[in-house]
Image (cartoon, rainbow, N blue to C red; front, top):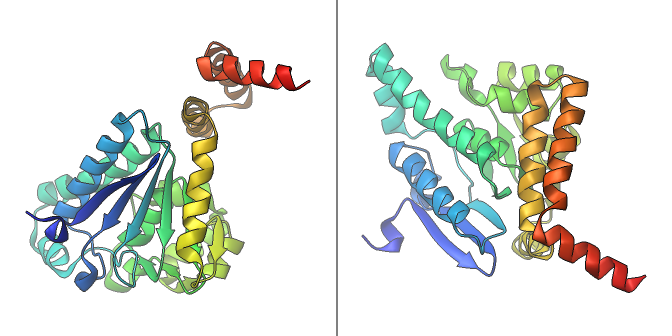
Length: 256
């Protein structure tokens, strides 16, 4: 199968691994193959010690429009057990993204809707072009953005989360940034170069320190304050023994 026919393209540029959803004719809609290929690409990137960051984007004008029509037909006719298995596959993707050592950036052009908005939300950082649109329209067809809700609730306030999941409305990039759903908005004209520059910054910092910081940040979600601070003590001690830290301290002391 040629790269052009793969549902997710994998490429490397320096220390940046790029995963590109490659179904532009379907607005990069999600199906079982796309989800499996995303998992494979993420595993490949995370196992490559030369990589510092992953960027997920979509081919064509849109990031991802959610589940495709075939997947929706399958859902409507499937048994409870079949639907649980299907939903678990997407859950595994979201958990994998959170457990990876590498930071993951969603580079969103156009629409990120339903499962596509969930995919972006599951990334550690979301960068959007000024004309991008975000939304969870599932309630319009009697569905629920259930699995991403645990992530969404950690990204925005409770009231904003409820508004997003209960009204099914789309919001623009500026509004998404304002409520904390995304990190930064860049102009449509300079979006690609801005994303490249943003991702390149991860090449200048310690990959091991970023991995430890990511793990600790997400571990704290269910911890009480004292437990979280103690976890910080443990990670602090681990970081001090890291070769990157020792070399960084040595460089800093030389400049004094």
